[in-house]
Image (tube, rainbow, N blue to C red; front, side):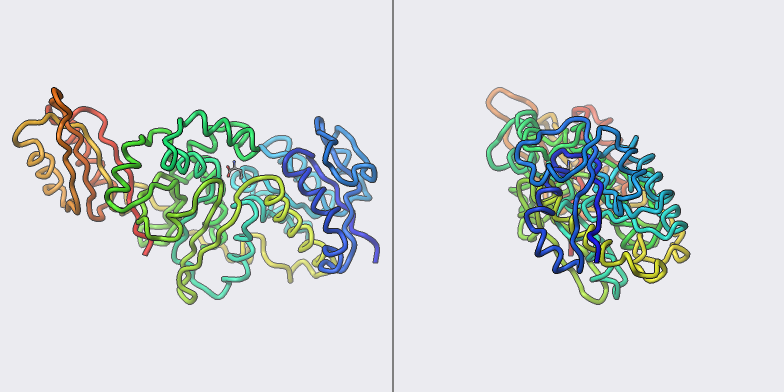
Length: 436
Ligand code: HSE
């Protein structure tokens, strides 16, 4: 059989890794795919040739549309990232009848509905394993391995840079900016690192996971997103004292109020496996009704781990080249005509427990006033700590954990607490999930 010809768009961290894995493991990959897979074309404006294998056999151009329009290319692999021109390139490739593999989570989360509709129309596949959690085969697990289950919820550490920062802050007390700079140098961080620290990158990935789990269209605009930039070292310390670790989680869950879709810092019990996923590593916890909880762990970013997922997709696409399009695994796990219109829940209706930290004037009745506001709102306090004020100071940190309550009630209670004369403005609130 003729080799399958791949056109790479981008020869950066992931593009270079993909070329190297395809060349280095070529014979084993051919034994798996049933055909030889060759990178014959690549487009890159800038790249470092040093360390790239087999570049002499690749026809290079700086115009990505040349690759997309080349009749010799069977599979276009989009590794440029960002929305544009990635969207135009992918749509053109589909229009040209080519299969596409992409690692572009932003593209899939925002434009996936349009892209999959076009691909369905043309009978081609758009594969995106590398878009979520780098090297972890979580898309395959959700689409195929867990296909028997009614998925109940997913909770994931799905941004390596953010996890790296939180881990270094906790373990070494390092400065936020210093750790971020290291993640950028290692090629983990997004081109715009606010995507990592403000949770946008995780929201892209969570949007994709929710669609695969629940069979709903991609709805990135409905995802609640809160970053880690306001987490203070003292919150990490208090959380530990209560028996919790702070992780930046993406959580999606079926509830009567709709599908929860939220990314925010979260206290999780330190004894849970996922609470101990450190550094740039990612982990995704999926709860299915038949299988129970399952945990997927691995490198969520980086050249070779991400290339591992890209190449797996290329092998999958190669195997299905001769398959009737109707018999391929559907892009969003459910048949295109079977997507559900179940709505995404408003954040006001989400129910979680809370960690609260506030600064109080050290005088009689303050704790009672705070507790009274919480009691009036039907919020039960689970644990509380008040530290002795340092010598000569009259203000003390007051830290507490509450039982579960709807966000709307907690927002109202926090507004009343902040209005107390004896409480300084700016109550810190971090949601708590037990992940049972
Ligand atoms: N910036 C992302 C991360 C890269 O840190 O996880 C992988 O999507």
